Image (cartoon, rainbow, N blue to C red; front, side):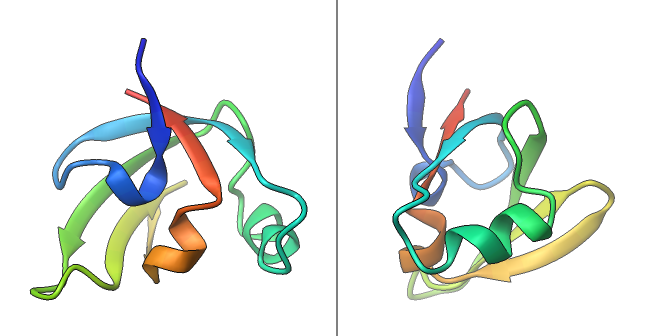
Length: 76
């Protein structure tokens, strides 16, 4: 399996969260929102300039900036 940052997940593809960089100030907020290892996440739509991206996780959709999604690692 290939491990990439969530920011690199192609539109329409699903990955599984493997880790989150806990040194970032945003990491606790993402963990509270359900971004925990083992959770599937899908890139739904990317804005025309590439930022933000809408993701589907745990039955809801959420928009993240590239800087926020770069701290999450996923396996395709």
